Length: 320
Image 1: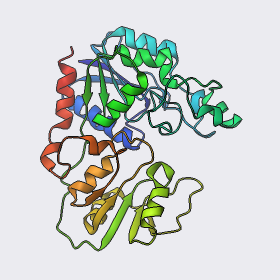
Image 2: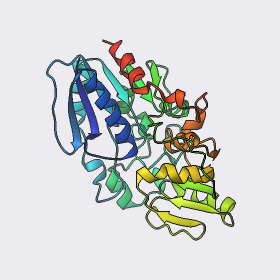
Image 3: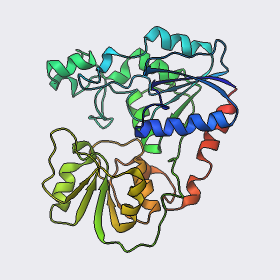
């Protein structure tokens, strides 16, 4: 098939968690013989088939929230998105909540009606960065509704991700959806039956979005190790901070940990790191905001991660 892949961040260039997923899917599509052209905002580039069989749109809005990221000042024009979505059937995949919210994470936890409870509290600089001076929930914009309602298929990262997103959209016009299981190299993340000399382990950005205050309250006097950078303005005053650890070394730490802690304050689309820890034999200390825990499957069973990319592409191929 001729496919136009349109993504705010080029998954061949960027290395974030969402881009890791997009890149794996792109690579599988190429292996299957599809002719895929990629257009992105960062880096700025447009490569489109004139007559595609299908378009795949990924994290289209993806607002930045600092002056250096340029926020809403960079992005696809609405005319460009309209042209792409009119050319052929399109599939919409979102690795986060960026296509239903222009604020960091999802600070309303999806419990928002017509008006956003957070925007009116923002300072002038923050509102300038996202170029939004109103109070309407971003998910209520017609451009957002068009993206979700006109797709041939919406792809989510967990049952929780779908539920929260569709609750925010508040629409009865939504098309079918597909839930993508975690894409994990089970040969890398497995239980090595090592001695577990770490009581509690956290891996990720250390900050309030990942539940720092809850962890401080529950584990201040416990043996808890933190892997990952601290969010701006955050200084850890408990536990042992190991800082950045190469991704290849993370499975070893997970195999040393008895318990893996993941208590995000706001909904996580998936939280793949939880599935990785479960595969390594950790007991999971999580909460209702962890998308991975909303799957009806045993996260520690490697058979549940077989053929995920293949299942995704079979679904897309049946659309055409």
